[in-house]
Image 1 (cartoon, helix red, strand yellow):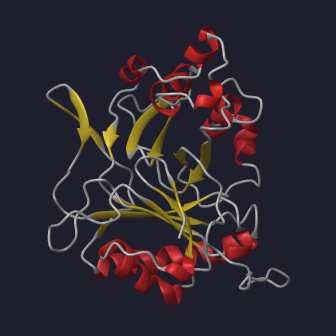
Image 2 (tube, helix red, strand yellow):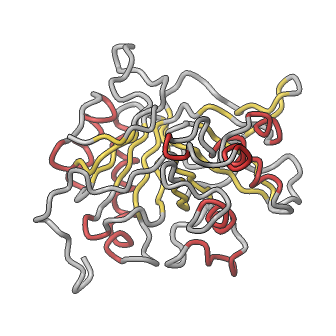
Length: 298
């Protein structure tokens, strides 16, 4: 680690994560970002747009339905009209991939918010709100149709904090862990994909090109998720349809598992225990989230 940036090896890890209802993982194709990701490109970026809606004081801010926006190194899909700048996002634990969010207007951002990110049902604490206010804060499925090519995520996703622009502990550890996870996943028979998700047209519908029954994993660096002192920080999302080597439903299918203090020497064990076996490595466990957005503790 860089001088003066030590890893906290004393304080307990279990439960050291902020609760959230959804991770919006923005595909930037970059490995690092400014300390505040909303400041990238002079503030003209998707993270800034979403934080404007869901951040403190935003139109859709809801303390009982926190939307966490993070950048990732995953590249965005190329839109059908290549001249239009577009951004892709993963929604987790909804396990949805939204390939095309054009940057030419705010309409696609609002469709993402209203169609996928707002809660389907409000927390009972909102019972005192006016009907108009309650309606504004709840999801409208009609908006989903405004975003073309949305896909179910079937790949195992490994997200590693590599935000050196925020803290060099993760900046130093993230790229090393990415290489380790890619190697160890490949040894377990995964096709470790690094290219952008390719979306093509089939019978008039937009679908992922080249999809097969092969096991696919994607390993990416992400921006700040809290707890840099516990670097390396890793989140493993296991898709709902994932199965074990024996063809049985994976015990952690639909879950996101957070780990801290991960070093390269731990990666092989984490892949074997969590990705392959569906077991949590207790001494690295920071918390997790299940398919029903319940926060997990040991």
